[in-house]
Length: 229
Image (cartoon, rainbow, N blue to C red; front, side):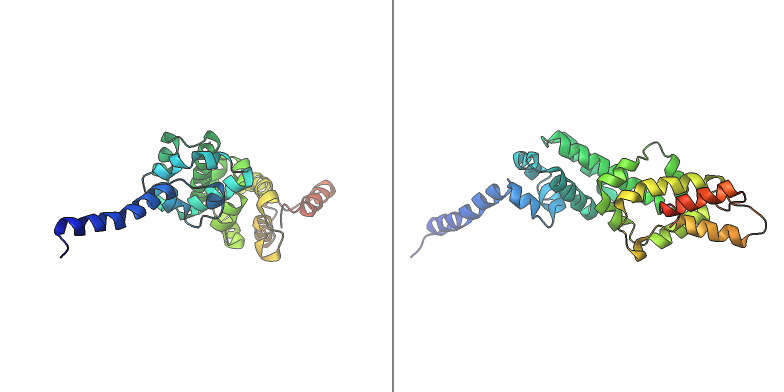
């Protein structure tokens, strides 16, 4: 008859391989990082950043493209109230500096886009954190966070003061000249919406409505460069 001690010993032997596997799995390879579907859980929340430390060598080996893709997925999986904690955790671990910097920049971009969806989106363009290069670096993140470009343009056009229309149009062109997918349903329509509003208003009230031949020529040039469409 099996004693209690023997029974306990067998249970410990059965558990031990699982514990060893769990310890091994805390350190991820380059390929595992690249194919990881839930990196926010596995690297950040599962063991309070231990896996991030253990996997620092593989993280260091990520190419720029791979690192950007991994950071983008982490940001998309992070809860709304978790970005400060995420940024702090990454910086206090032994995580490679380039990866930590990428996470920090992505958090800033996420914050800016959140404000773009707010009541005063035009204020983002004068925000000290605003940087066009962030939108270029994380183009896929922008595409996920601003899926409806037409609705975004309409809201921005409704909130922005008239005297800022030209500046905002130029900045949108700089942002989306890299991130914008060249398809009909993805076009940034801010300029077209503003122009339509100005044409329907009495008198010449818009920066987008040319009166002289020089202004007409300038408008045609800007349109060709896809600033207004």
